[in-house]
Amino acid sequence: DTAVSQTPKYLVTQMGNDKSIKCEQNLGHDTMYWYKQDSKKFLKIMFSYNNKELIINETVPNRFSPKSPDKAHLNLHINSLELGDSAVYFCASSQESRTGFGYTFGSGTRLTVV
Amino acid sequence: EDQVTQSPEALRLQEGESSSLNCSYTVSGLRGLFWYRQDPGKGPEFLFTLYSAGEEKEKERLKATLTKKESFLHITAPKPEDSATYLCAVQASGDMRFGAGTRLTVKP
Image 1: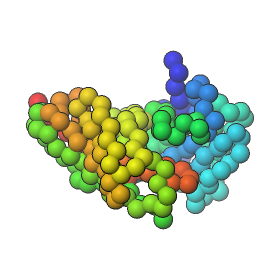
Image 2: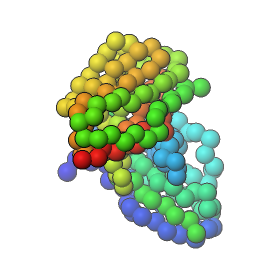
Image 3: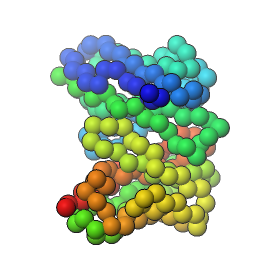
């Protein structure tokens, strides 16, 4: 199936740990994103990558780092996890030349920091 | 800074009761206004893109319209399967900025 896939779907971890969330898209899109959805369901952009270059970096803590080994993957690494990092994280992709088709989102990773 | 405000936060309808969701926006150089549907435990699913004032798009029971300051998502004779959170987003020169969504519940 063509899609954006994220793993894991659920992640429970203790404060201070380091964790990664993986994302892969097989749509041939050239841009990938990470969004954070908080408890109020508000989606906020964190990062986007276009052709392996970071083109947007919102004011997120530098404990968060995106890593893109190739155009089809954008992983999110988080160091020294804090309670406030608990949220649902969504990966998305798009094709820059086809903005009218919107973004394709993964199904999300629910991160719980205890 | 780009702003997107959606209202109401939540809307409960009876099956067949038509209504509208509102998305007000402030953005410089709008490239597109997007509507998405999000079901619980899933990512947003793209519905429509609108580019300029006066434009309308339709899909089944949904119709999206756009003015210079706001967009409406009209739902005609909704069914329980239309229950979801509907998200509005705008895109100018950079990334897509989302509103907080309207949680729609349609009761049979």
